[in-house]
Amino acid sequence: MEKQSHELLLPLIDEENICLPLPINVVSRYWNIELPMAEAIETAKKYSGFSGSILIEGIESAERHGLTCKIVNSSLSELKKIIDLGIPPIVILPGIPEITQHASVITGYNDEEKVILHYIQKGNQEGEQQEGAIPEDIFDKEWSEEGRLLIMLAPSEILSSVKLENDSSDKPNRLCFTSERLNILKNSSESLDSLKQAIEIDPNNSTVLHLLGAMLNEQNSSECVKFYEKCLEINNRSYLTYSGLGNFYLKTNQFEKAESYYNKAIEIDPKRSAKIYKNRAYLKEKQNKNSDASFPSSVKNTNLFFPIFSSSTNPQVFSKGCTIFLSRLVNRAML
Image 1 (spheres, rainbow, N blue to C red):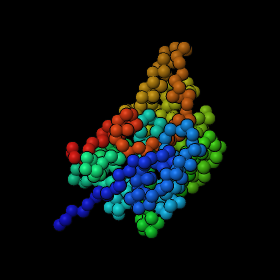
Image 2: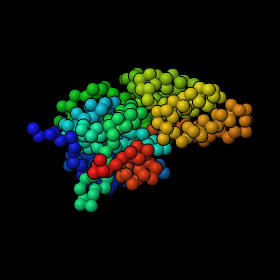
Image 3: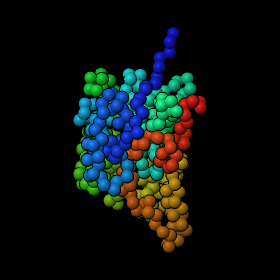
Image 4: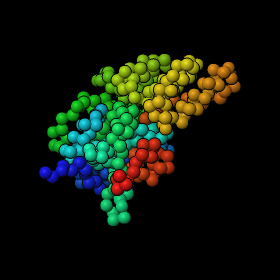
């Protein structure tokens, strides 16, 4: 009996723009839809000086040119099902520094080797697609830190036939991405309004809960705690939420609580925790009655805990410090 293929062949693409993130461009080309770079360049003018990719701009561009999108909280089994339907999913994974998330295209999986296959921007010497291979257990652990967010882009007739485990999470998740854009554009009031709409739709969406906590933390409001804690009830691997609580308690001189939450964040992902180590060193100085200890900028600048999505899928870029996830990425031929 012939084995079923669990791999998708995606186009090799070099073009990228702040408003045309590479994963969106790759998946659009997979469906034979070419998104105009001129349009993306014009849109990017709104974000002068910003470093990162505005995923919602790329998504909306793809929708304007004929694709339909769903942004859902998913699972490993559903990810595999989507691949077997011929749809290349985009997932949100941890990045570096700790405040970023990383958008990656998943091209397949191998149950025998227990790996998830990841799109690599550059082909081999023959110009053929290469794939990164991530151990399945590591992939799922790191994906869970971001609530297992998954983006599907496909023609409407294909997407409408897909039965999703958590289809109701699409609208609140999209509002989170909209809120991200508004926050980048310094429209903090409208950004907060988007999150309030999202929480009314789904009070148990961990992404919404974390972002509400992060925005209130930025405003030095103790109200942030209840949203953070509710987020952890739903996703107890939300690294950024533990980090956010640590920052809040550090700012309010509740050092034992701050250290406890920092320790939990480090336990989840020690390689993502450079700033937390600095913050923890600061609180230890304060606990030792060192009033001259310099307050760490990583706590002052709490607006950075709003997610910024990086989207490069070139492992050479990752190796320069974009994401710890790719230190585990190997050429599939090496397996």
